[in-house]
Length: 315
Image (cartoon, rainbow, N blue to C red; front, side, top):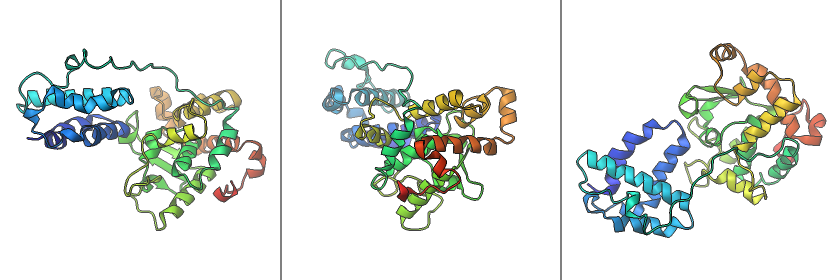
């Protein structure tokens, strides 16, 4: 039994179904496909602490978070293998094997996601649109801003989720943090982005096509694509997730829309009464709010753009 075979046939099939976040699944798969690639063909029982160190050492200083998480995932694989009779001995990936060799992993600080002020979001969107001719990530980043969705919800979106007759985007429960399907209204600007991504396909979109395909055939954009787009625009001090906070700040302080509609657009957990009520018919009520948000993102052009289809070529 090789390391690669155990990962692909035993360990990952047992672990990955527990994750509701598609990005987490991709990160775990990347650990065993890319970062631990040198272990793939080695017999599981023959792998030593030195083999694991050879995986970690080259990236420990430059990509510490990635290296730390890779070590933790490999450690879990060996624990799994030990309990299932495929490995005997001390876990070669346990931190106690490296705590006198490698610097301690950096501690991640948790806090609010840095967000662009709602007063400054329109100039940001204008700069973003200037990059969309050449960048699929720039298109996806505006889609995230327009819908106030999470990055993974946009990255893994497919055409099967789009209903252009009802102008809705239905995200299935398995891709949602709260594990319930979420329906978001598609605004005029979002429809324009869809038209552009479809044009770039060069053919009719199939249901399983990604809305925002990556440069590699059949793959979505990478997890870091949107964040790197921010950095290239000199907005690296902000986060993609922070765009949700930008929307919420605008909606809560600059509009009279009910809190329940704002929270429902963000797909936050609501109280039982609120949740039951909102599931009846909020999409159309939220549509007006999101069209107003889209006009806010247009900045000084809001009045001129009202009631008109927004063309990508116009930006």
